[in-house]
Image 1: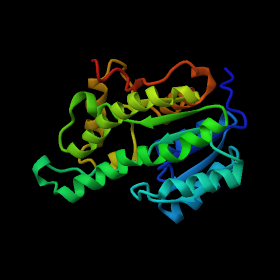
Image 2 (image 1 turned 90 degrees about the vertical axis):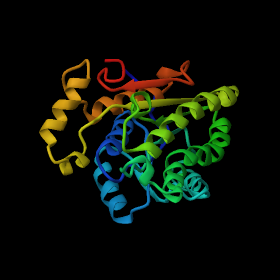
Image 3 (image 1 turned 120 degrees about the vertical axis):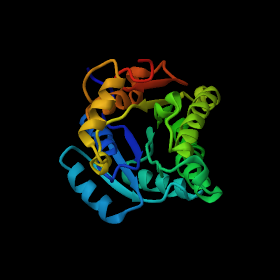
Image 4 (image 1 turned 60 degrees about the vertical axis):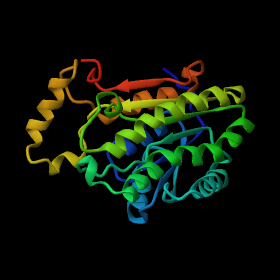
Length: 251
C-alpha cells in the first residue's frame, strides 16, 4: 500500500539509541519520507545517520527535549535541510526505576519535563509550520503501562497517562488546521534494556504469557503503526490511542 509519504518531512525524537526509535525512522524512510533524527548524544547521532543513509535522506539535530527551548532549533534544522515539517514522532523518554517513595521531586519533574512537557514545547513550534503546509500529523509514543499500572516506574506511567490527555485535547484544537494528533502505545518490545534483566528468557516468556498473541513484538510492528498514523492513509483519524501490544492491555 502506498502510504503517501513520498517527499514528506518527518521529525523523530529519541532515535539515536537504536532499537524502536531507529525502527520508526527506517519505516518512515522506506515509505519515502525525509527524516530529522533528534537526540542529545553526538556520537550516537552520527552513527545513526550513517546507518539511515542506506534507506534515504536523513539529518541529525542535537538537542535535549527536556530543554524548554529545544524545538525552535528542530524547526530550523528541518526547514534548512528539507523545507519544513509534515510529521512529528515524539518518542524521546526516560524511565528511571525505583519504588514510588524513593523518587524525589526533582527526579519526578525531570521525567515529566522529558516525557510530557516536551510534547507541548514541540507542538507550539511545529503546528504553525504544519498549518502553513496544509496540515500534518503528530504521533506521540505512549505506553500500555498507563493502562495496566506498572509498578516501579511511577513518573513514567504518570507521563504516559498525561500524554493521552494531551493527545485528545490538542487534537480538538488543531484539527481546524488539518493537523492530526494520535498516540501509539507499545507493549513490552524486546530491546537492549532486557539484557540486563537477571532472567531475560524468563521475562520474555512472562511478556508472552500476558499477551493474546503468543510472540514478541518487533520494531517493524511498531514502525508500521507509526508510519500509518503519520501518513495520509489515516487522514480521518485523530485524537486516538492505538495499542500495539499483542493484546496485553485487554488480555
